[in-house]
Length: 416
Image (tube, rainbow, N blue to C red):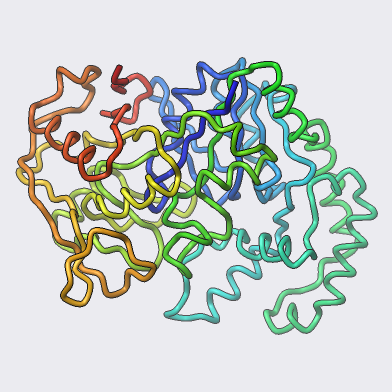
C-alpha cells in the first residue's frame, strides 16, 4: 500500500482542509508533514465550522489515527488549545518526538524582525514559524521529545538565551524567568506526554500492514522555501517531496498525488501575484469567497485563475489529478478570466520564471454561468462551467478529478 498525498498548488488557502476531511473518511491514518500553526484549514460539517491549525484534518474521522510528523514545528500552547475542541484524541493523535518546538520567544523574534523590515516586511503570520525553522537548520533548536524532561529542557533554553544575549537584547526580548519557564514546560509535559511518539516507525508499520494513509501539508507550492516566490515564502518545503522528509518515508511510498486549487487565485501577505485583480471584480471574489485568513484574520488578495503557475506546480508535485475548489464563488460572473500566458519585458512566455516581479498576465475570457452551488454531479453542471473546467485541464495538462461546489463536505463532485 502507498500513501496518497494532498498538496496545495497555489499560495495556500486552496481548501485542503475540506478535501482531507472528506477523503479521510476512507483512510486509516492521516499525516501532517510540515508547517506550523500558521496554517489554517477550515472544515464545514453539517453547518458546523472547524478551524484546524496543527491537528491533521483527519481528526473528524473517529477511526483515523492522526500523525504530526517530524517536519512540523509545534507550538505547545497552540496545540493544547486546539486539542480542547475534541474529547477523544488519546490513542488517535500522535506528535513526532523529532518535531521541533515553536516556543513563545519564537513569535517575539518573528514579530520584531518584521517590524524592523518596515515596508520590506514579508508579511508573515508572526507565529514564530520562521525563527523555529531557522534554529532547526542552525542546529540550535529544541524538539518535542525534550518536553519529557522539563528540567533539562529549561536549562538548555536558558543557556541558549545566555549565548544569544546580544541578539535578544537587540530585539528587546526578555530572558524568561527560570521558575516560570519550568512551570510552563511542566504543564506542556502534563498535557502532551501521552501523545509524543516515534511517528516514523508508526507510519512505516502502517505501510507494512497495508493501511490506507493520507498525507497533508500546509500552505501551498508557490510558498515553498525553494520553489516559491522567494523571499515571500514560508520556511518549509510545501511541495510533495517535502512529505517524504517531513514524515520519514521514501519517494516510492507515495501513491496518488492530488493537487488542490481554487477556481480563482488568492494570496495572503506580500509578494508578487500576476493575476491579482484590483477592480471591483477582485473585491467581489473576496466578498463572496469570504477570503479572510483562518489563522491571521487578514483579508486575502484575490485574482483570476493563473494556469501558468498551476501548470508549473502540477509538474513540480507530480500531480495525478486536481481538486478544483470554490467553483461556486464564481456563480453569476458574466465573464471569467484565466491567465494563459505571461508578458515578460514584452515577450510572451508560457512558463513560470524564477522572478515574477516584472511579469504581467495575458488573459483569455470565458462566459460565466448562473449557479453551480450545491451541485453534486458533473452532468448537472452548467455547460459553461464544464467548459471552464475542461479549459483548465487543457492548460495545466492534468485532469480535474474532484470539484467542490460549496463549503459543505457533501457538496463535492467525484468524477469517475
